Length: 297
Image (cartoon, rainbow, N blue to C red; front, side, top):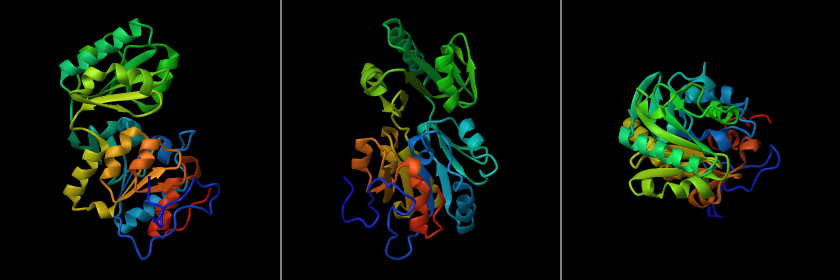
């Protein structure tokens, strides 16, 4: 659990006046990394309006702001259109990192692994599990399942996607395979992928989502590479997360915050606790630490 002696520890906030206390003296933050769903976004998946003026001030101060998400790069770029100059997007749970339209790093899956995953999903579906696969390429995401209920979920995270007859035959660099389970991903789909967990990273990234990637790929690895490339230390890094796919990047920062609405394991792993996503916890914590005006509700 976060240390109760921390001046930045807070309980779930109920109004705009509560939240983490400012640290003693100025805090030298050079890199801010935030998860999107359940963290920066509220439950209606909206970016807080107060983020846009804050981004301008962060840029003026030379602080790099980096969204880190299981969402694809095209989705993130669309969400931050007009404010993305110099921004580093850690997309697809760290398997694809882009800045100003240029790839900084990627960690593609072997095609044979992607094929085995899709075949496993097909077998599970034949056994009655209500799930579907999203094969995530650099250029697009690809799906076989065509029902509107499934596609509506895909659209939330993959604005660039295609329905194809056979996702194992796509001509793209596959960086991740995401599985959407209409039930509990943590209880049903993830355990069914035990054979892949022995050689690859199987991450529960949401209540209904499981992502399968190379063992070398995660948000934390992407953050550490950024720190090395930009000569930024963990002490100069501020990170926010709420779910299990955020654990490794919390380890990469001394200023690591779990949201008040976070998964219990994330709360245990983070050094500090921020107000919930619906209480604008990311913005309020940044404002307190960097001594910026508190954003409106």
